[in-house]
Amino acid sequence: MNRELDGVHNFRALGPYRVRGGRLREGMIYRSGALELMSDVDCACLGDELGIRTILDLRHPDEVAHRPDGHALNERVLPLSIFPETVRQDDIIAELNGLYGTGPTPGRYLHYLDVGGDRLAAAFRLFAKESSYPVLVHCTAGKDRTGVLLGMLMELLGADDDDIANEYGLSDASIDRLIAYLRSTGRALEGTDDEIRARLSTPADRMAGFIQLLRERHGSTEAFLAGRGLRADEIGAIRELLTARE
Image 1 (cartoon, rainbow, N blue to C red):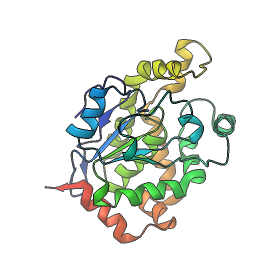
Image 2 (spheres, rainbow, N blue to C red):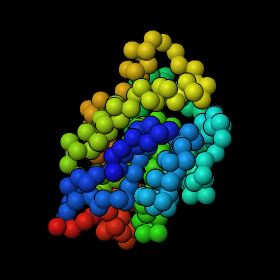
Image 3 (cartoon, rainbow, N blue to C red):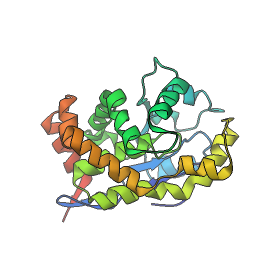
Image 4 (tube, rainbow, N blue to C red):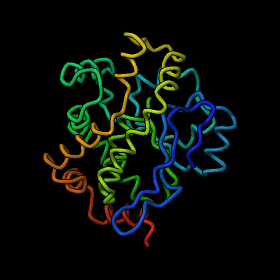
């Protein structure tokens, strides 16, 4: 399902892409930006029509504080901030901007693995459990932290590199809705509209560059996860659950 929801930006299903041994199984993984502005119709779609069991929220607690209120699917939410909760979100962003600039870069995304590697591994342990599915993964924009996690997942499953990069690039279509969300929740956005859009863009080559750096530094997603304690049977379970054999 790839349709716009009333109050959720950047929502879409992941797949079905060709992966090693078949295709990415449909109806298992969804992705989006923040959810707290969902309409009742949106909630019914996610909870009843799609049957989402787990909502993996990758946001830092400082971002969650911006929420005007909760939503009807709160009991299905699993908070899993990629960034340490002991450091202010503004300080984390300032550090990333100082190192990599204000827009998306492969190096910035690789840095997520350095500061949030154990959190990413925890997300993959969730993916190894059949009871978790269907899963909706989101952060604030649904493109950076969500993009890194799902790019790694696609790499683990053996998706084509172009598909991994192009899936990330699809988030460009939701930039205007993301800007509207940020403004509606009181975020200060500096610069002209063109400068803001440039910072929030998702050129496919940024994800392609991240996957290349991941392999140069760690060998593969599988090797990275093994280094963080993920067992071979857990990795095998992910591939079995998410691959529709042909």
